[in-house]
Image (cartoon, rainbow, N blue to C red; front, side, top):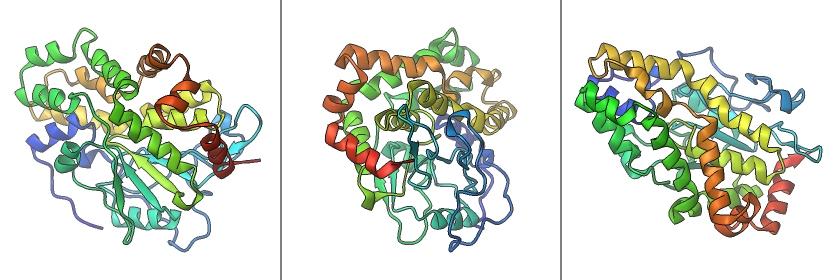
Length: 318
């Protein structure tokens, strides 16, 4: 396993601004099955009511806390999303040697990184199995990285309250989610990734951002809806990030307080979490800009009827 030096207080502050910190990841687990194992999906699946009895959910890729398989979700017309085809995750820059072995065993062919260049430069590139290259596809963060980093780095409780308090943290996030719909470069990144999941030669695929919850969460919601998964189920998948990230995020807040960066680190909770109102902001912007989710997919993202048919042919099963 590659050793990781202790994170400095300054680096910790920046890591929280990115909503991820190396020491916040889960402790090493027992060694995963060998890379040649025929099926990695009969392992660490977490049950979900809309996934019938299929072994799906979070996958233990050591060095991550929010690596998940979309497989098993039921569509409104009775089919299920295939396991082992598309995964969602946080940044893979802290994947351990054991995690690399697990990734290799999943047979991943493409990794799409939605982080901005500033995030990659600060937090580090993905750590991937030999021969697997990352596809950079940045989605703009509307300045959130700079805003959060500056507020934490100031160590000023009054400034932090002014940035995050009184519902302002939630507003930062709602602004971000609306930009997913309005920003042309973001639409191109989301649309291109969705179109690639329709191509059998490009899957299994992993797409991720920094914490695997906002950009990744919106893209995951769109993928499930494109496949015919009901909106309530896609929303539940979106909100699962809170469950899987809770311990890691709490540890980051504790580190900030201990390091003297924040007297009230709970101000960060709205930025660390996903909330129904964030998804609703994006969907409201979809209605304002395109009239319907279907038209947003077709016109805004280039996911036309033919592409949706190919998506379903590639990713659905009985």
